[in-house]
Image (cartoon, rainbow, N blue to C red; front, side):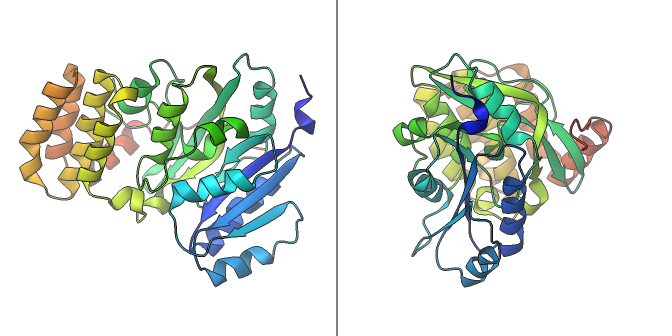
Length: 317
């Protein structure tokens, strides 16, 4: 097996109309202690301000790919993968940041993995308006759909594999690309389809290696799309999710979206979806009713209060 330090990792960052944020993300990628790095920023559509900001970065490891029109985050990532020169690809959202040893620690694990196509993730520091949290609260487990989509507790952050923590072989990403045109759930969709491929497995670094700036994502497409879009996605993903995961997704994701949008006519149909199409546990019913009856602001405050002493940052240097 090659020494990890000599294997090039391509960092793919899709961006649009966020010049100050993407330059921060690029700086965190170029500041990695792992040396063999190239950074491919895919500017998703006409965006002269972002291009100008990126051109101020003189590091030759930075590659800028300009798209003539907006294609969305999933397709932009696929463009970045095709332009990548490294054997391994890591993803970084333009409003997130990496801690300095992120790639070093993941590549040490990657080259020792027994999987043909390891998918590496790590813990994250979730930075929100309500405080900072160390997520996930438990390491990934099988079945992955239940780990990602179902909960066994009241609070968020139990099972997380956030996009900005992901690293895998470019070969896998060419075989299983992100689903073009998918507006929401892009990381879940790709993970669930990828782990279905023989030879693929999850490797996880327990310490936090990235900062997820949740507060800066709240106005994006992923947070504002209609709940019906998410319902259609989970229905189309039935081959890759268990019935328990199906129930958990409807009980949390769909109910919270519908409640925030004031779609009370969805209350009974979604409850029927949980019961008839899934395999719910008592916690799913509790979460479902909680999403409808407790305002989102109150839930977030309670989560912050319950987890205020949780964050323990491992990398302070």
